[in-house]
Image 1 (cartoon, one colour):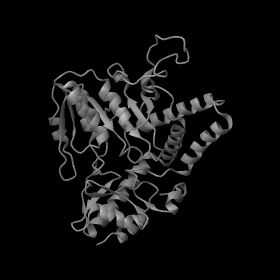
Image 2 (cartoon, one colour):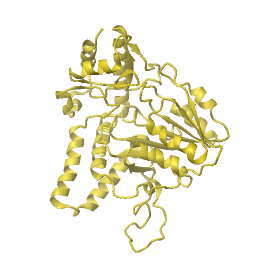
Image 3 (spheres, helix red, strand yellow):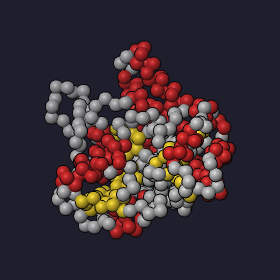
Image 4 (spheres, one colour):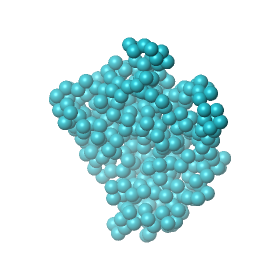
Length: 374
């Protein structure tokens, strides 16, 4: 990868940072964009609010471009959980409906659906993770005439397994089942086309592979779903004519904006915009190809020194996450050993999780391998 881009990440001067599946460091462009906004607030308060509102709309367009959506289908929410909860809470559920998911999902994509069991008598059906993988056919076999939603991660957080979104999405679309995706562990490192994959709703916070700040997430809701997902958290900006304060009877705002109930995290949004601009400049295909090549190399080196790689390296299933384990060393012990050497990873469900990005290098992977106990 071009050294020009690596220089935009000051974290490289202090650490070998391989923990983007947890919280990513921001780049210089992200820092500078957020600083411009906060400096303007410091010096001028509200004076330039129209210019910053225009900036938010620019970032909405960039986010839409990233996933091949319309800007009208994109809202900015607080985090991944918020977007997923908007969908879970906005459906007109009936006793006997079911939701299909997997038993290895991160809690953000579990708790909103688990709640439905007690609240509405909705059945939760879960495909099982086996040897770090999910079986697409098992997922599809759980769908029947009472399935309202299939909800899965783009990439599973504790294995790095990449779900076959296109196959699952097309199957759901043919049966009028809503396909909801938690994209936080893939978006930014891997390409995702919501049209091609028939994704109906998507949520992804900025602070992982999108390399942005926390506290802001992209929430995509397909235009075909607008009348099927009722807004359940609403406020003054959820409606048209928001500045007509004397009027109470108002229609919902156009598109996904109705899911933005109040003041936005403008600093976070402009930071996210700077990160997306950088990724589009580098090229999504270039980033994906590099990251997959780097994690292939990482998996090979781990195998060479006696570590079991849990993450699938099959074509179409691999991602920017590699999880491994060793018969003699716990994931927590390995994490501690690496951490004191300024090599940043994380333990997850008994596995050491390593998650590089496009500015990392093969030499950093070699340093990781050299630091691991053999």
